[in-house]
Length: 73
Length: 202
Image (cartoon, rainbow over all chains, first blue to last red; front, side):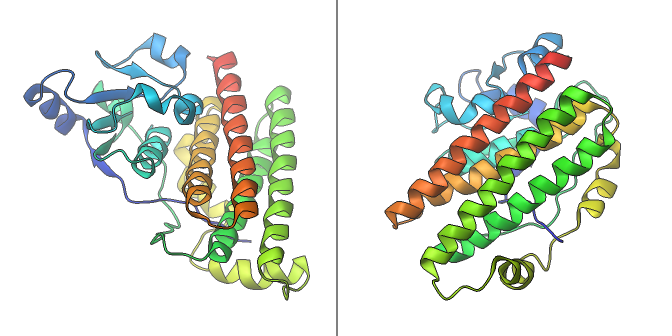
C-alpha cells in the first residue's frame, strides 16, 4: 500500500535569510508565527513571535493579517 | 523541525495569505543548531481544477497513509497512553475512508466493490507515492522521541486538514461539501488531541 503527503509549494527562508529579512523590515510589517505547543514556546522562542499552536491555527485566522507576510516556524 | 510550520505555511497560503514563508530548520537552526526537517515525499500538486472524484481519491489515499503511520508509530512506542490514543485515531481515519468511499459512490454509482476501488482507482493515483516503510526510513532522525513522532503526526494531520478545507470550499455539491467539512472538523480534533499529548509530555 502506498500513500502520499498533500503538499503544495511553500516558499522558505533559512535562518540567515530570516534574520536579514527581520533586520531590513520594520517590526509590525510582518508576522513571525510560532506554531509549536505552548510548552515549547515557553522554553524558548524567537523574540517578537506570536504563538498560535498548529491545532488552533484554523480557528484563529482572524488574529492574523492576511495582507502581511508571515514567517512560520 | 520544520514539519509543522511547513504545514502551517501551506494551510495559510490556501486561506488567502499572500506571502508566507516557512523558516527552514525552525528554532533550532535559528539558534545555530543543526536541524533536520522531515522529508517531503510524494508531492501531490493539485491545480485546483480537479474533479470531486479525484480529490476524494487523493483524500482516501491520505487517510490510508495516516492510519498506516499511526499503526507503525503505535507499534514503536512503549508509552501506553500514546498507543491507546493512536489506536483511537486509527479507528476514526478508517471511518473517514468509509465516508469518502460512500461519497465517491454517490458521485460514481457504477463503482465496484471497496476492495477493487482500493486496488484499482486509489492505487493508480498513489503510484508515485511511497510506502510507510519508506516514509519512516527517510524520517529516521525524527523517530527518536515521542515528541518528534507527535510532531510528524501533527504535520500529516494539518496537511489533511488543508486538503479538506480547500476542497470543501470549492465543491459545488452541497452534500459532498458537508461530508468534507465534517471530516475537516474531525482532523482538527485530531490535531488538538496530538497537541495535548505533546503538551502533557513536555
